[in-house]
Amino acid sequence: MNIMKEKQIVNLLRKTFIFYATPTLLLILSAIFVIGCFGLDGGKNTEESKPGNREDGNRLGVDLILSEDGKHLVTRYFDNNTKKFVSFDLETFTPVEMDLDYLPDRMVFGQNGLGYFLSSNYDINDGISYWVEEASLNIGIVFRKWKFSNQYSFLSMDNTNRFIALWNTPQSNSISTYPETNNIAILDTISGMVVEHSFDYRVVDIRWIKNKDEIAIVLATDQPDETEIKFYKIFENSFRSIKVPNCPSSLEVSPDGTLAMLAPTQCFIDPVSVINLEQHKFVGNLPGFGPVVFSEDGTYAVAFARQFDLLEEAGIQTETGYSLLFIDLPNLSFDVMELGDSIPIYTITPNGQIVLLYSKYGNFHNTFGDNIVIVDVNGRHLRQASGPDIWLSEFVITPDSESVYLIDEGFYKLNLLTGKMNRIEIDCQLDNYFDVNCAPEILNITPDGKTLIMGYMNEAEYTLYNTESDKVIGSFGKSSAFEFEEQGNIL
View 1 (cartoon, rainbow, N blue to C red):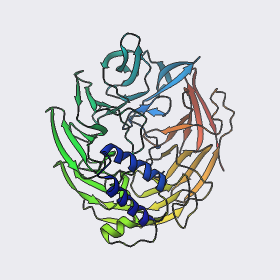
View 2 (cartoon, helix red, strand yellow):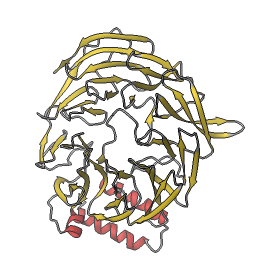
View 3 (cartoon, helix red, strand yellow):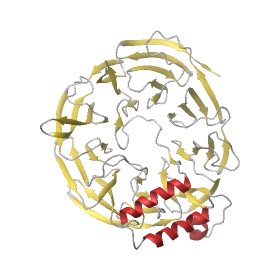
View 4 (cartoon, rainbow, N blue to C red):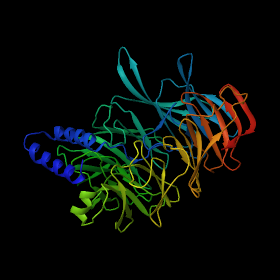
């Protein structure tokens, strides 16, 4: 469908339904229409593995969960259909069974070797309750636990590793299977105090503001093209509120905590809304759409733009249906890089110099095929990776931004300097039960970038891979001590 016609149909739908449809119906129609017409599968890549806490909690048994300092690995595994939880000391590779009272799905790392585990529990008398357990990752003992009457499925630790926020809506633009709720909870892991808040509107997202005792809460109002953002100061126990002329979505915060962007993907109204976090002020809208992501060095952000929006709102003529928007910070000027007739998934390297693009359905760029496309940010130059067509569905980027290691029915290395993709064949001859099997499912990388840890979901057996020698160097697990082994071959 022609992009201009898409926009015209959207405007027509708005005029047709605005007087007859409820705000909720408008949002549903918006999501259905956009998904059906645009076939969106692009946006910010959320599958990169890093040490530390995920923004919505580490998924036990699904993520390869590694502490930010690289000292602990935490996982869930099955033993005769029974869920068990273990923490590994990565200095000695010693497993510690976690003696938890409940069966958590997510956890975050705290201070002094502590972990916080979020669980739901059904009791025939009390019904469903929700718990956070504080446990030592060194000895596996639970020290404290907190019970919540409201439903919470996600948790997020602030950057001081002191405060935990709990809520029930995933930080995603996708339609959620989780029940919508209006509640959040803040847990102070030092004092043990819990504060819960209820709002008039549905909680869409929450984000900690770096270097502040403050959290931003995104709320969906009863107007389809309006979002309320509440800023909660923890020590003051006070709120400030602003309205943003945009549909609600996940909120992205700049690395220095001074700027935020709200940029939905699946809505009638979906510009890139800019918010000044120091002044708690809406700055303005840019002619793009989300999801948006900031580079780690904080010098720019990336979003998408439609051909029609660029022409109508910025007077910029493009030849392709979709473009990539590079937003310079802090001046908010932007450059346009034309793509094609669909939108890709993107991620940014740690040094901010490269953006990686790929699509599950191909054809996101008029020149390139289905393989990963490497964008050199400084020169706005595009080049396609050579080698097999691979998705960035489970991957790590080395801290020096020179290599990507990824899993896609095999184990691969992408050299970002040369653009060459190679499959790494590992002789599956390890004595350990876990033989890497030439196709691990999950991986992570140590903070120094020297070692990959690879394994399977819901297992507790791992293989170590040295990124300097590009060889397996050993294996460890819940039932086996560390074994040294060196093997591997890049094809």
